[in-house]
Image (tube, rainbow, N blue to C red; front, side):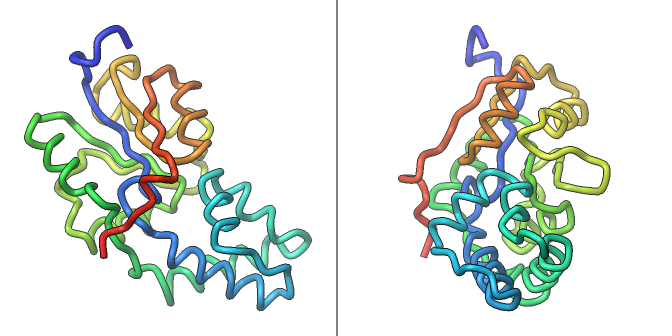
Length: 193
């Protein structure tokens, strides 16, 4: 990107970037690992896998992959989905972009329903012109497809877009799509209390 003043849109990851959704993910993961007699992992280990996308998460289940994945999703959605907090400064940043009339889209590897449910809980749906989550048949990051789809829905050129995320998959997807990327570091992982 030659000039950051020519930004046409900002694409934002969800977990670890805008919201701290690690509590429900960690609780559902610990419950799943225990139920399927799999090795227990630390919170930090689960966080690292979350940032790498679905493939990394479900690979933890080994031979029980299909059944454990189904159990994890059900536990997450029924018991923990709404246990989220906004990341420190996230709403201020969204207000700033909205004030500057910069279109925004969420691009997440989280399921479409889950992403929308959590954004509704925070009262943030009005910020976004597009929400691209995981649905059957749609590739996930690090594949660039969801970023390109968001740009198509926003009617913007990917070369004039910034992708902001906290995970390896976010950065790889941005690089493959051909847009500018800003990677958040673990120092940003402070949630609002």
